[in-house]
Amino acid sequence: MSAELPEPYGSPPEEPASAPTRRTFIATATAVGGAVAAGGLVGGASSAAAEEAVAEAPSGRVSLTVNGERHTAVIDNRTSLLDLLREQLGLTGTKKGCNAGACGACTVHVDGRRVNSCLTLAVRLEDAEVTTVEGLADGDELHPLQRAFVEQDAFQCGFCTPGQLMSGVGCVEEGHAGSHEEIREWMSGNICRCGCYVKIVRAIEQTVGGK
Ligand code: FES
Ligand code: FES
Image (cartoon, rainbow, N blue to C red; front, side, top):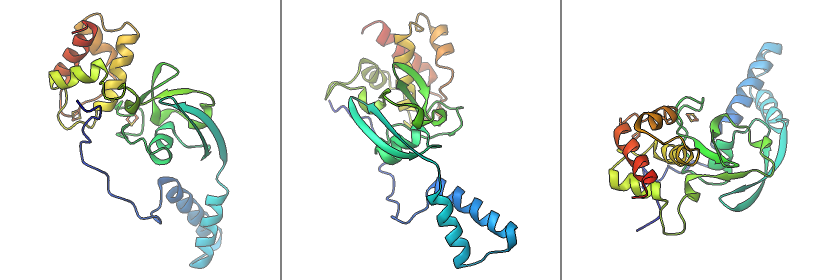
């Protein structure tokens, strides 16, 4: 059996090399807004101001271990762990849903604890051990919870699944999976718009039961 979970929407389209990122867009908008307010810069002058603003973005360096592999990255200090994983390390299994701490799609483990990576500043994770959904399986051997998700048919579109898996593993390891009700409570930060909650709880129960 393959260790990979299905990519729900297929491979994301390639962005052109010159496509603006969220940060460059914000920096550009800020710089252009400031320039206009200061006296109406237009054309070449405004784009020079924008480039300067991007170049001056506060930057830092972080070295951390992700799924057993050491990485060092130079990042804007405002970069979230989610953006570091997806945009710099190419680990797109972790999903960006709300980007505001409300859906749980971005759940990963940092030093053994589950966190919302969209709310976690990457620059603060020096020497941290991060595990993402790509690190759950052992080679071709799926993690027991991944296997249970397949057997219980605990997903539909699959977008929330990486976050559900990481949170589910955390829920079991924390000892918060003693009953149906307890699982529902401790998984309540992970939203599934397809409404697969009953089967997700069953998959966690199956994992706890060692079946
Ligand atoms: S993307 Fe992080 S909680 Fe929704
Ligand atoms: S399976 Fe579609 S959002 Fe959960």
